[in-house]
Length: 131
Image 1 (cartoon, rainbow, N blue to C red):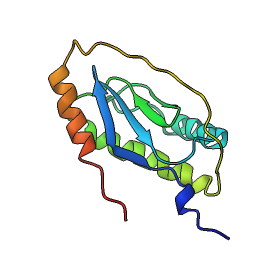
Image 2 (cartoon, rainbow, N blue to C red):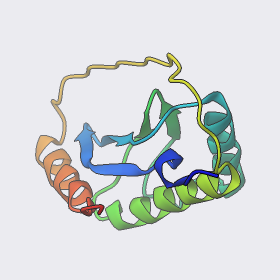
Image 3 (tube, rainbow, N blue to C red):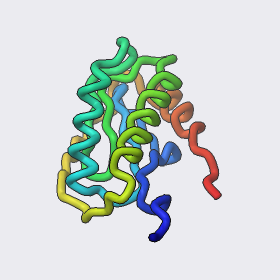
Image 4 (cartoon, rainbow, N blue to C red):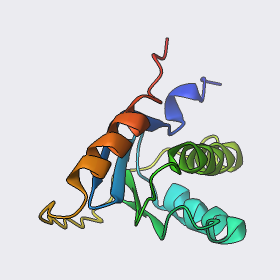
């Protein structure tokens, strides 16, 4: 009966990047098929955002969010943290292998680079030392 805390996935807010309003934030832990399927199910149950951001999806160890609006960072944090906590609660013993779901979309930051930098800084400020 080992502890499951090392198997839980958490959001690494220090890794947050915003480029052209799109957010990528890394997840700690293993990316298993079961965890990913449950993430998608819980995401569908929660429904679309209240307008502060667009599509949310899981992609190879990270969460990607389209079109984050300025001043919506706190709401997004709450939404994503709630989502991850719910999935962890439903699959506490899930420990799988990393799966290739590679989607690199390098885009030129020609629009809103200052807003992107500000939103990145806000999201990274959510990083808390875990001890």
